[in-house]
Image (cartoon, rainbow, N blue to C red; front, side):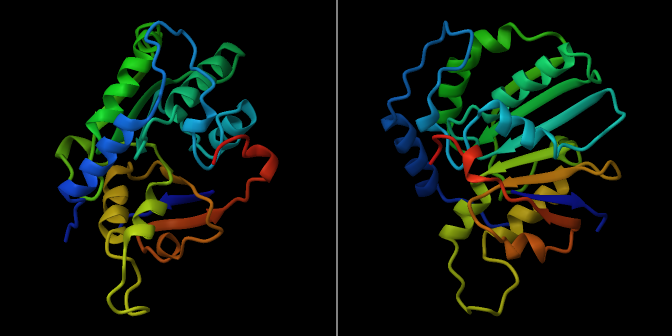
Length: 240
């Protein structure tokens, strides 16, 4: 897991074939949606890299920025059909009930696949309707390597990335190996992450990755610092 903190400081894009691939992939998944479920089903086979066990969620939450602001805005990129944002929000609400600091939480979970976003909306409809006024969870289309809408700029206290950076690294092919600091899709990704994070509030880009190092993130000059934390294998659960 890596955390990059923001410092003051040509857009590639995913083509239609890539988006069609993910739409087809999620259509083929046997996700077993139950719109009447009040709690998320234990579909750990639909999680990747780490599970959503409480000990894992607490570890991730420990990296969230400490803020005195009354509200916190969290963006997840490349959510797929993961329940990460929902599970984190549930955990944060539960902790507030235990007497910890009170904030309003707004989670925005995004992907390029409209199929997976609709799946998530259907799966979590009952839960979202039951949320208190100070908490929101939404699923929204966002292509994080395209030009961003102005309303999204410098908005988020934390950005969650569970596998998106890895996917772009896997897909990217350098034409001149060793001559570029970043793989082709990584530069627009990191530039946009920098634009999405709030300025001057110790905002963080939290990457959950099976890789021990992400040199492209380490070498990106928009982040004030980059820290790595290894998660022990007993925290990984049944996730792949």
